[in-house]
Image (tube, rainbow, N blue to C red):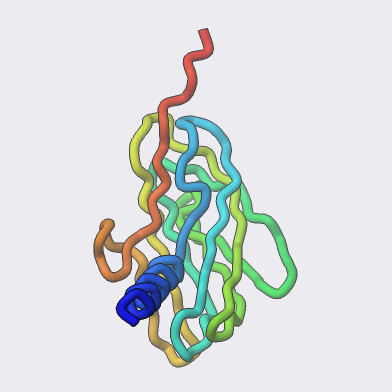
Length: 149
């Protein structure tokens, strides 16, 4: 009986951790172009309608992969894309994935992706915290580029 309870708690904890908005891959090389995927679940009982990704200052977004069922728009500061907003209805217990292309920072280190998830009832979830927070930002670890000498 105790084993069954522990297993149930472990499964619930794992599904709650997996349910956060995440950016993949979680590791990439410095200075290289990368295809990133934003994975968005709707955890509660209200449909997600919009997802906004803030682009970190040292990352350069070059575009998004167009797909069926959603629209997107860029927010710019001059020529630089500083945010991407995808609009799609993601019903409770459903996931969506959005792909964008970017050039990584030239230096190794963590890149925190701040995401704002907006719902049909006007509420939002801001995935902007540090690791261990209730709503952490997804982090990609940028590793040193290989020496090409």
